[in-house]
Length: 197
Image 1 (cartoon, rainbow, N blue to C red):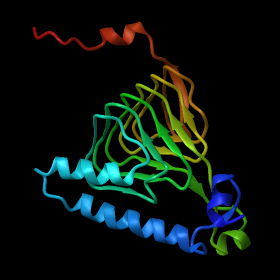
Image 2: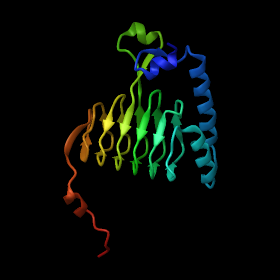
Image 3: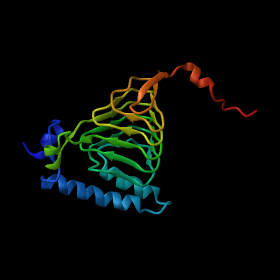
């Protein structure tokens, strides 16, 4: 079993040992450099770059630069995805994001982790567990989503949260570690009016 297969199976693997993994990371970094250095008016060019980098995109999506990831091909975006500046996705495993997901600035989505014991960690070994984000999720500024997490549809992740375990659908979570504060209900529609006066 090669290092890519180990990673896909959720086993410890050496990302620096495998020449194919190194080659793929370098190719992603080259595309990201181009994406992150496009002038502000070249949104169409940015979209072409990302469609060539990411595993799947919807017809409509927008990622504000700078954006960084490890490989790109493990990232799947649904329709109407929006990410503000400084999104980081360590996509050593699959990151599946649903439709109508909005991401605030300085968010990190991490599939990769390292062993707790010093000996294996110092050998450069790591693991990767997939992250899944359901439809209609809003992720607040400065959120960290850790390996293996699933976020249920319609949930809101409050700014600064560190999400270490699965989040049910249609709830508000916040904190470090993130915890469910309350369900999101029809009453939340009444909090803000779209009518002036």
